[in-house]
Amino acid sequence: MLDVNEYFEGNVKSIGFNTETLPATVGVMAPGEYRFDTSQHETMSVVSGTLTVKLPGQEAWQTFNAGESFEVDANTAFDLQVKVDTAYLCTYG
Image (cartoon, rainbow, N blue to C red; front, side):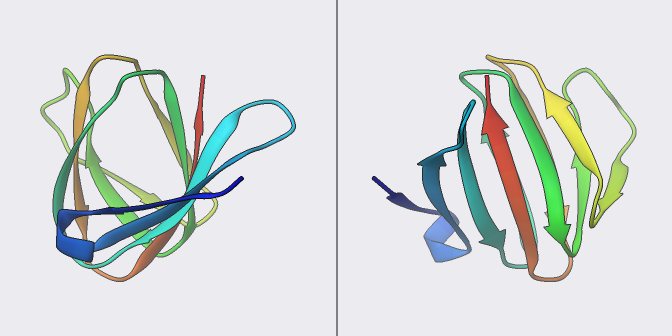
């Protein structure tokens, strides 16, 4: 079954589902700045747009464009800057 999620006053919306191998979410982020906490390992792939990310333990921001991805360990947090509507796919595990 699909799980619909909404965060940051509706500026981030996602749909959770199960892929053949891992649970996942696909969604869209409106422009803004966000901080996400993780409870499990995440791989986030940018589908459309751009995410500027400050990964745990890093001081520098990194930019990821459509077709690129990054990983975040469980039980950490990461910061995002979004300048244009950006679609993503996130797998967990």
